Length: 209
Image 1 (cartoon, rainbow, N blue to C red):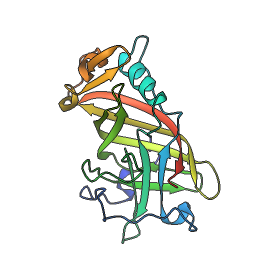
Image 2 (image 1 turned 60 degrees about the horizontal axis):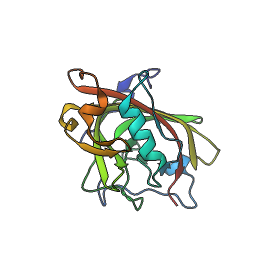
Image 3 (image 1 turned 90 degrees about the vertical axis):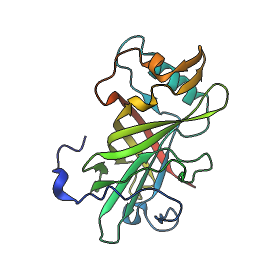
């Protein structure tokens, strides 16, 4: 995703991270097309299966279906140098961006029809509420994504597609699934690549209200 445009078209600042007061977004009277916004995933979030019997996709999708908390969101803003940035990462349960689980922003390319990453986002998170009602923060790295604006005001996104890596450091994280307690390594069921396991997910999203 985003391969249509060269990653060098916007300079990257990997130190640009989500935090409590670093970024101001607008989702009120000003169009999200002009100032950026945060969009929370709707209930159609789906981890794509890599084949029959993908326990990780099956478990996470079932847990997301049973929860009202968005597992991920999309946030965009304009840096002081008029550079657009985007992050695909989980919000806190109240919709605010997590200061305990900071995420980096990536350079963003825009078109009237949508947005996409111009270079990989270094770090982000999925927030999954497991069967015991415990939020489990799953780190993701090397995140690339794209989305289509669903309306002229950019108040919602459709066809959000994200590819990311779950690093090896997350292998021992536990999820209470409908089938019982499992680690991420148990659920993945395959040996990881050098950097971890590749996951892909899709969803649509609305601006935070």
